[in-house]
Length: 106
Length: 117
Image: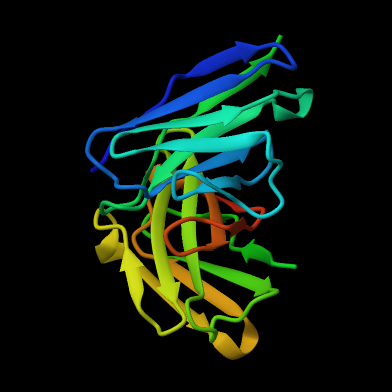
């Protein structure tokens, strides 16, 4: 299976820029997607196919990368962005998720 | 507005079969390209994509669970279903359905399924 590796946690101040990384154990082309999940809620799609902003998602969120290295960027970070962020690939079978990066605000 | 809602038994015993229903609105599974998927989340395994069913009845199953999964749909009633046989305590999780394909565009709120004797 394709393993997606994410940093466990990050802490940033409101107004700053934050980059959340996701590294795949094998190439996933551009089929990397990003989700935000707040406690007690379902995941919400932010970015699909590496760099496409999902409907209704603020332009503060952006995605980049291809192959094995991908980044979700939030600029500027707002207090409401406190959440866990997951990456997911759908190029290789089975589709897999990263373990998530918990974003905390200082 | 796309909405999805999962329903299930809440609790079941080991070796039993889990039956889940996803009731959705805002789209039709008879429309070209549409797809509904099932994903689960547990504290032990994190997020795990289980299965997809497409408008043309094509199906995708996670190979590690394929022998235990059956996905189906009722297009006229805007529902999708997932059955998982031989449930174990390790299958305890929140089960989500999503309007999907290769990514989950819209997710339901999830239903917690606990497997316990």
